[in-house]
Image 1: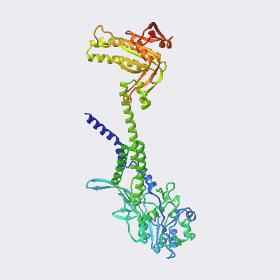
Image 2: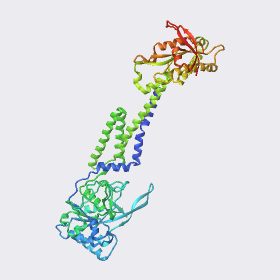
Image 3: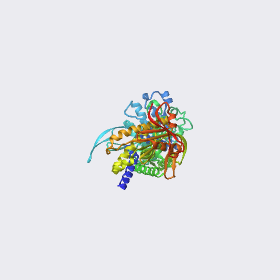
Image 4: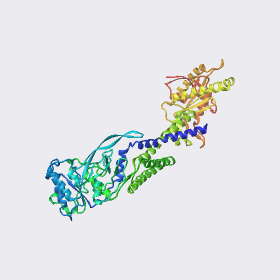
Length: 601
């Protein structure tokens, strides 16, 4: 049974300590901490890079809008004019012109024709298209499910579409509203529609590439630049109006990719990104970052649930072993190193093209640590309480409390001189009573008696020093200081005498057997502390004060509480006591003044 109990205890401990592992795994399974995880990934992974010298952004900024008027009132001739300016000289013309503006539907024939003719003459213009999404019920062999699909797909008006390449400009923020992914292609009516960035890439390189995409067809974007990084060079901004008027040298764009797009807050085309926490990034700059990633072949593959879970469980297992095997402080240091090592390892994996979750493993490591700390704290408290409960069966509550407060210090051999009150109580005629009762009846009788004496002592804040057969010794004012301890010692004696009357009625004993106590009390200096050996000690009081109390108790008849003159003098005026004269006490050469207590005032 002992082994079974121990095994059950171990299994219970393992089950309880598995709670943080289960909790963090559930949080991971349901992506509960995804928003926090993404923020931490931004800090750990997105470090920016070197901006390619062959990508420029011409921004439709506030200066441009001041010169040409609100964007809503613009004629498409403005775009035709800037295309013509950029391509006027073949030697300084950009390799590709990407316009991140939607030209959907026709306006006037004149402006539509001018833009189409300018784009046709340039031969290298890429414009945007745009998809709108909705829900669609899809039927499979296993049943139905709801999918997100492109419902509509807007493209440039026909004349412009015929002479340009287009790609969708859709972006999809993550759960926290931050743009970290690019939609590679959109499936519309069974046809794959390239993204604007990919269309520019193909126009520039003439080749094809495919970044690793997730289940939603998105690829993770590693930003190279932050806001304004692609906007001109040498500290000057390549503003639309400056390029149009020749103020900004068009020669800067020779053989490069030139992107034209909104650069004004009022045009509502700016987004939160991992590298622009305090400011938003314009949509055309996000396209520039995406194009650079495609050109640099800088792709990051996001680890799936299975890979992340395996790494998570590995870290949790290591953390569990460390906290189980090592001291709390040492394991804490090791877990700091483990967390730092994990984050560093994730950043190294990121450099090699893999994106792993960070928060779940890091949180799991410290959840295990904190849970283990509180588990051990509670377990220690429960064990301590259990031990104190066990000690309290053998020691007085005051001694047990002293052990709990002082710990091992209270278990050191030695003592101190202290003024105390000492009480001895004994059953009168116990030998004859025990001879007339059965052994089991003697035990019941004695246990009831000891329970009475102990409860009387505890009720008056005394300390049970020891049980000596059918006698009980108690001290007052040790181990803790006690107010009016001499009075309380006498009160305890009277309570015992009174309790004996009640006990006699409750016990089933033979006719003629009487239950009565003799009590003796003395006060004065004594040595109190731990007496014995390193492996067996007893908290007690020793000295003449103790011996005298024992001798006075020997003089007491059944139902009497006898006290020394020292006790009487301390309680004079508060005690009703009868002087019994001098008594010859064992071990005392001279007679000793003894008083019988009748009551307290």
